[in-house]
Image (cartoon, rainbow, N blue to C red; front, side, top):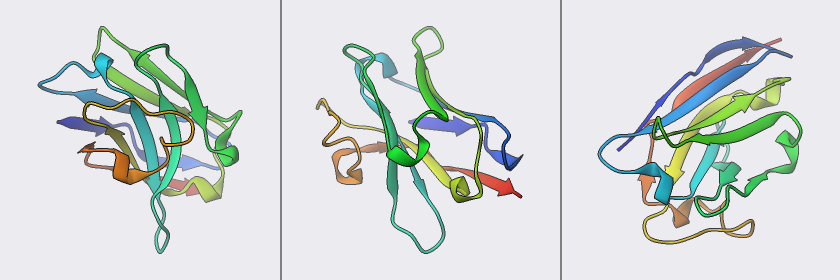
Length: 126
């Protein structure tokens, strides 16, 4: 399973780091995507990191502010959120696809993922 941590309250302009740890399997052989869902909105693909070459992708609205990374020793993937904006307020999920590799065209579709974290709430105060 994927276990998330690191959410909470952050001021606009501040920083927060979300963590996604795998329990029971080696996360380093899986691509990992980060999604978010704000109230009344669809789940949106935010970022992705490839297990093969570390390639990363970001939705346009977070480029230059968010950074996805992987720590193989800790069996975890992280989403560093800097210069946070009110529109980043959402529940954030990490996810991994089963036995498939994704790319910049497919990472943003939730249907491509079989394993999901429990979600972590990020609240941005202005």
